Image (cartoon, rainbow, N blue to C red; front, side):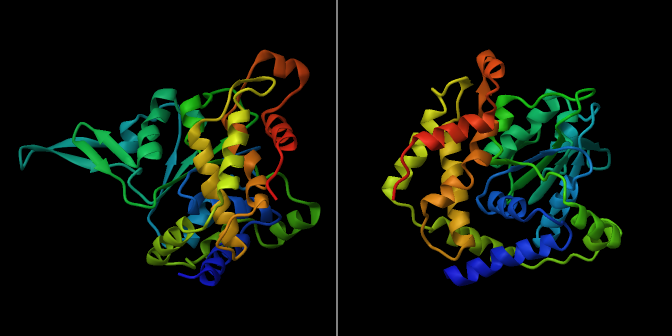
Length: 313
């Protein structure tokens, strides 16, 4: 697959999803970055802004298996991974796979489930496998978790652990649409009508080809050093108790490769890194008490680092 075909595929997916969602052009691009980088995506925003709709629209645009898990306080790990059931006729236990055995998994309102249940996704997201009492299963590639959570609710929710946050390649927010865009939503009877009519624009075979082509996007040694220096600086930044992991460096490079392919290039430029660094790194940081006193946010911490480090020319 050449760079022109790859660019067309990526932009076709974006155009297809944008039929459903209005006013989220940059966020749509970054959501597509997350999928084609081989990572996972966390959507965090206020209720009713289209988080679940974006997840469904992206899944429908890609010709791949899709499942949805509605996270609730009473959800158990076996409800995600699957369970062994005794077959009386055969006299044996048979394993019935759970919804995690799909190419695209929507973990809706993930922070409503207990930490124990959330941990059922850790191995799947980190290693692409699932361990059960029936043995270990390797998940079919690509495997993409797109999770949603509301950022203003506290009752009945659990904070995602650091290990879970680190497994999300990017965290995005949709935000509110403009007045004109909200009028367009009313005229289109909301999101659901357009979502029902959405068709895949890329086959599963082409998706795998696209992954291979993105992997071949070139990055210079200077930009590799820049990525590592930025990530390393988060570990000693003011107000940061725990910085980003080496997984963050890898995720940042992979997302930058997709950004380059989106623009029809087979090589990374500094802007590919700068445009997504906050979304890839900020959610992984843990701030200390001094940061809250000084009003330092995770996003501000990353921006401050980017402003201090010289960008390769």
